[in-house]
Length: 184
Image (cartoon, rainbow, N blue to C red):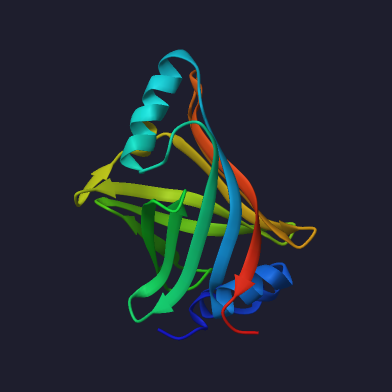
């Protein structure tokens, strides 16, 4: 897989991303900083804690985070390490291109079919479908996911949150990270 896997998928729309997001996705790198993890209250908090456990997220609060982004023959690797301890690995495989394709994110037994919307030079994931252990899961049963990454003041800003209608926030994590690029 070439270093152009992301730019090839976006085609001419790649230039609509912030230049630092372009650089990160052309060459890979590390994102370093802290992340804040929060859970909902009551029933939503209980569901959020179960979901977080399956995602290998640490407890509520502020945690150190290092994200390693690399390319390989199999796709784009995002390895998130919390508190220099727990690692959550995801593999993103592009299919087609932005106009007629999607990404498949695999994290453990979970596979998500995703597309990307570019809003204000940021990258906003949109979930198209989900499967676990190879079996499709109706989207109405899956918590709504909001996930984005953007650049502000030369910092990598991200947010990932899961919620259910009527229950509200289940679990979310967000942060402002510094980037080290593998190639200049």
